[in-house]
Image 1 (cartoon, rainbow, N blue to C red):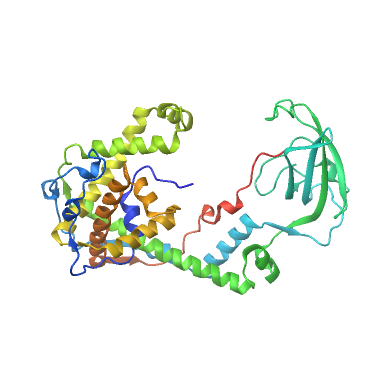
Image 2 (cartoon, rainbow, N blue to C red):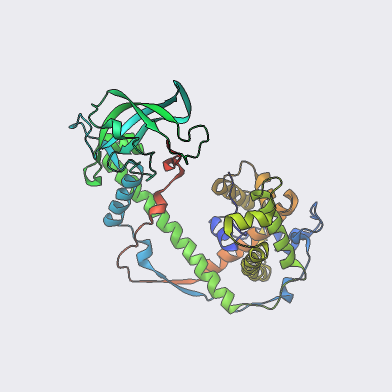
Length: 413
C-alpha cells in the first residue's frame, strides 16, 4: 500500500532529485510560466492561487552558504561492515540447524511444522511450517510472540524427523470465539534443533541460503557497497537539509499569499481522511482511536508542519525566479519516476492524484516543486561544505535492516 507523509515535505522531495538540475536552452523559464493556461480541473485547488512570490520573500545571501557536517557520519570501515552483518544475521537468520543434536531437551529452540485440529478438523490459523519455538519460554525467539500455555511441552523428548500429537486447551479469553476454552490436538513434526548463529562463523552455504550471496566474501562486499551508497545518500541529504536551514534563517518570508496556507490545510486534511478513514468512519473518530488526539489538535499540528513546508517552497521559488531556473520535461519525468519507485506508485497518474486534489493539480504542484528543487540544487552546488574530523562512524540503526520480509503474523495458537 502506498504511504504518504503527513505533508509533502519539501526537503524530502528535493532530496529525491539528484540529476538534471542544470538550465537547458529552449525550455520554459521559472515557476510563473507553469501557471499559464494550466488551470486544473479543481478551480479551488491551492495550486491555482496566483501570486507574485517577490511580494512575500526577501532573499538573503544564498550564493555564499557555508555548512559543516560531521565526517564520522559518512565513514564506512571494517567495523561498521562487521556490525551491519551481525545485525543482518541477528534479525533475519539468528538460528540454524544444530546437526549434533537429535533429541529435543527442555530449553532447546526447535524448528517445527504443525497442524492444529479440533474434533478431527483442521481450523483456520492453526497450521504453520518452519516455525521456531523456544521450549524454555514457549515463544518464538525471533519475534517474541508467545504460544498458548503448554503448547511446546509435547516436544520434549521427541527426535528430529519424528511426528508427535499433543493436546492443549485454549484459554477462556482466547481471541477466537470458536476456540475459547476448547481442546485441540496439534501434530508436530520436528524439523531440526536450532543453535544461535555466530556471525563470525557463517559459511558460504549459510549466506547463499539466507541472503542470496555466493560466498561470505561476496556477502561482505555487498554489505560494504550498500553502506557506502547509503553514506553517500545521507551526505547529500544532510547537505541539502543544512543548506535549507541556513537559507530559512537568511531569507525572510514576510507573509503568505491570501488563502494559500488554508487551502493547503484543507487539501491535506481531506487527503488524509480519504486515505485512512474507511467508509462510515469519521476523521475525528479515527484520530481519537489511533492517535489519541482531537481533530482540532490534528489540524493545529498539520498547519505548523505545512507552514514550514510552504516557507521553504516560497524561498526556493523566489530563488528560481531570480536565477531564471528553467523547467524541463525530461528531467521532470525522471523526477516523477523516482517518486513512483520510492513510493510504490504504479503510474504517474497515481503520483499526481496523491499530491493534489486531482491529477491536474497534483501534476502542476509537482512541476512547481521540481523547479524549486532545481533552485535548491543550484544553491547546494555553490555552497561550501566543511567536514569535521572523522572519529568513529555511528552505529547503524537496527530498524535499517528490518524489512517487511521479516514480519510474521503474531497471531499464534
